[in-house]
Image (cartoon, rainbow, N blue to C red):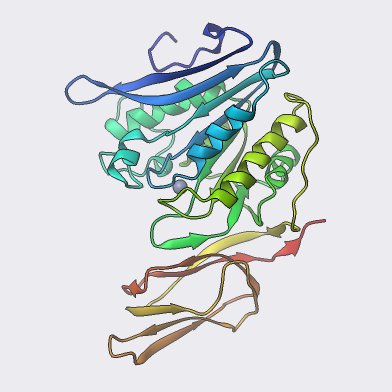
Amino acid sequence: MSQSYYLNLDNFEVGTLTKYWLPIVNDGIGEPIRIPMMVAKGKEPGPVVGLTAALHGNELNGIPVIQKVFQQLDLDTLKGTVVGVLTANVPGVLLGQRRFNDDVDLNWIAPGKPDGNLGQIYMHRILYGVVKRFDTFIDLHTVSFGRASSHYIFADMTDPETATLAQLQNPAIIVHSKPNLITLRGQAAHHGIKTITAELKDPYLFQDDVIEEATVGIKNVLVHLKMQPGTIRPPVEPIVLCEKSSWLFTDEGGLHTIHVNIGDFIKKGDLIAEVKSIFNESIKTYHSPNDGIVVAINTNPVGQAGSRTIHLGFGPTIMK
Ligand SMILES: [Zn+2]
C-alpha cells in the first residue's frame, strides 16, 4: 500500500521521535485533512503500541495524555515503537463536536468503506492505514456532553492479555464488554490487536487527575511489554470490575435531579433520579433495577422523555 494515509513504520529512523501531519483524505476543495501524529521508534525491535485521542471531537483528555507519554519516553532504552494519534477526528475537534464534519459518529461506522461517503472513507483509512499497524491499541475517550463520568475501561475481560491491559490502567472501574464490530476497538480486536477503550472522565476539559492516571497506565503497559524499563505502579484504590453496564433512561420529560454520585454502590430499588415539572412538582421517580455501581451520570437538568439518568455497572466486584 503506497497511499499517503498509510503509516509505514519502516520509514522512521530507529532511535528517533517524529512529529508530523498524516494526510488522510482530501476535503471538498482538494485540501488534505491531516491528523497530528507522533512516532517514537526504539533502537531495538519490539511491539507497536498505538494510542488515539479525540475520535469523538469533544473528548479531549486523551490529547495531553499522549503528549505526556511521549514527553516521558526514554528513546535510548525504548524497544519497539509507540504511535500517538493526537486527534483522530480533526474536523470534530475544530467544530467542538462529537461527530465528524459530515455528522457521522466515527466510532459507530467502523470499519467504514473504501468507497463510501466522507466519514466512511476517513474511518476506513484510519483503520487500515494507521490502526492496523498496532499490536496493542488504547483508544482514549471521555463520556459525551451533558454527562460526567468515572475513569473507566471497556475491555474484553475473557482475553487474558486484554484483561491485563485494562488492569494496568488503574481505573476506578473496568466494564467487561465484548468488542462491537462497528467500533474502532471492535475492528482492532477483529484484526488480532489487543485493545481497550479508556473512558477518561468528562468532555470539553483537560482534567489533571485523570490525565495523570491515564499517563501512568500507559507507562505501565510499556513496562509490562518490556518496551521501557521501570516498575509497574499499582492502583491507589482497588479497581471495581463489572460484568456489564448500561445507561438507564427516563420515560417522562422534565427537570432531572440525580440522587446518586459517581462511584456509589447502589442496591436494587434505591432512588436514582427524579423528574420534576417546571413548577417543581414531582412527575416521576426512578429506582435502580439492580444492585450496581454508578459509572457515570447525566448532568443536564433538562431532560426530554427518553433521557439518560445514570450509567449503571452490573455485578460489581472488587478486584484483588
Ligand atoms: Zn467517545
